Image 1 (cartoon, one colour):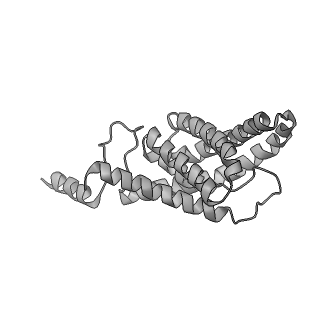
Image 2 (cartoon, rainbow, N blue to C red):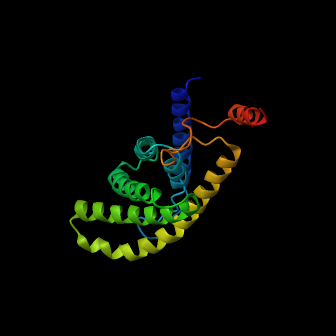
Image 3 (cartoon, rainbow, N blue to C red):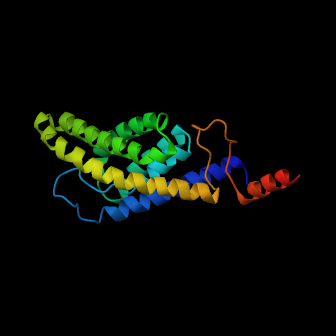
Amino acid sequence: MSMKVKKLTYMALLTAVALIIFVLESFIPAPVPVPGIKLGLANIVTLYALWTLRPGEALTILLTRIILGSIFTGQLMSLLYSLGGGLLCFVLTLAARYVLTEQQIWVSSILGSMAHNVGQILVAVVLTATPGVAVYLPLLLISAIITGSFTGFAAQQLYHHMQRLQILPVSCVKPAVESGFSSPERKLDNVRKNAD
């Protein structure tokens, strides 16, 4: 199997997992009766993808999940809110990835969650022409810190677990690392080379 096919298969798998989580979470009642507050469990997959794939690949997973998720859950009216929040979250998290370490993935998650809520408020202000909806922003930011911490730590644990298993795709942020996927065969080759 070529490296390109492996990468596409990996991206499809992450997209499917994120989509399943998103759909299942839509059946969970909101913890607080405030529009825009949700756990955002699918963001664990998005965050993981952003730290292990190229930006364009991670963005593809995010957009596919948002569009298909809105269709599958029948929430097409929320598509613009999800796109506005998701894209702003993506940009800020991507920027944070270049200055934070792999031990600070949870920090980028908090920043991304806060940006997501800001993006949703901006879309709401534009669509409703009602600046007063910004009154929800402080509460949304507080919830973003809580939910962002949870999803961030989950994504960080997933990242390090996959790293220990040596099946991570190589992040473009780590240019010194060989491109492609780590595998048991590659690990065995490295052991043989060291033995020689």
